[in-house]
Image (cartoon, rainbow, N blue to C red):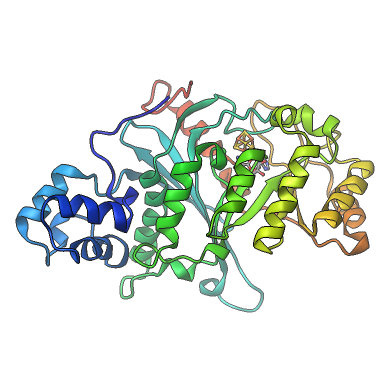
Length: 376
Ligand code: SAH
Ligand code: SF4
């Protein structure tokens, strides 16, 4: 389903598109940069904050664009220093953005590693059986401006915490596109948003620190390999054979491993960066040592990093994570032969940081609530 907002979001404009719009009004060429500077560097919260713009231009901007198309409705902070931002869009859909802080040994919290996790769709159409985001199907794609707005909301939150200095997005270590939705199913909006996030006139965040996670849309992985900007790529593998993967990820029927793995190789060869293979460990589904053997061979062949993630239980779904002993044994088998492996102790467990769970709960708590009942 497509949603047409009353006004396009300013956060979805690139320097080129905004310059073209302003030229149509006879504005001088420097205005677009000035406006984007107000949005991304000076963090204007209203059109009237933009004091070096002529009043009529401010009025026109207000009539033409939405300044920020996502409003913060809830910020839940967990004991393990994860923030979960619930944002409401113009059509009252709910999306989420997560800040994960991983404290480093021997230094204060202000020196923790900080990652921002963003969403790209409301719901998801891919139907992975273990995932809360896909339970109600896809409601709609996010517009580029809504994807960028999530990061701007994180900036506003950080600004409020550091009243004297404006927090730079660059103080975050990574952005991961691992929230709700399949990013590559919303390819054009994703690329436009990440171009704005990366640009020096935008949020100025390095592409090498941005990871796109996909369930394996092969033609889109190949297209991403052709892009000039080298984002990092993570593949949600979750099964090291077609039989296991197909059981939990319907996408594997369209793009089995024989198609997926060569596309991953091509991406790696083009951009020269290690691809990450994500593997959530689900008891009695994909945690056998045969799967570990196969996963090691795949990772070795692709020179990929393996990220093992104990499954985060979803209310109403039967899947469980294996015992810690089993997780460690699985990791040990993959790690032989020099494959680089991390076994994630996930952050934010106590506030349901896994994909889609907060939104689902909020909607359940308020039946008939706006934004609820995602259906395609
Ligand atoms: N759609 C994309 C990105 C969003 S999902 C993708 O699938 O890659 C981000 C990651 O969270 C994926 O690896 C996904 O498989 C994983 N995930 C989903 N539900 C989970 C759960 N309950 N516990 C742990 N990881 C989960
Ligand atoms: Fe969609 Fe990713 Fe969840 Fe699969 S794991 S349903 S692709 S969000």
